[in-house]
Image 1 (cartoon, one colour):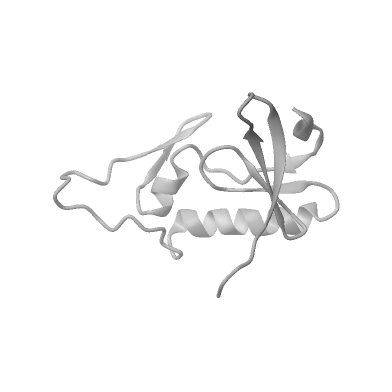
Image 2: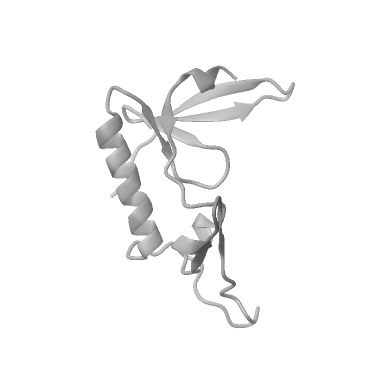
Length: 115
């Protein structure tokens, strides 16, 4: 895959980071992390929204901010979202995708933030 020639850093706390940003506690092993269950009864469960004040959300945002700052002109910064690493550079989001024939490609998106 041609995108591997681009140096990048992908802020990451493990495969359950989205659950952690929604309130689950992470447990860390030597090479990965996992979340403790937060839903004990499907009839009563906490809101499934990302909490901006959550420790893991704030940690990921700070890791991303530092990476953007330190990597300016040196490496790309991945966006900490579930799935394939996404890369942010100069206001554009780059994603690795696959077409219907199985060929991998790098797709560039322009994002508009609504405040």
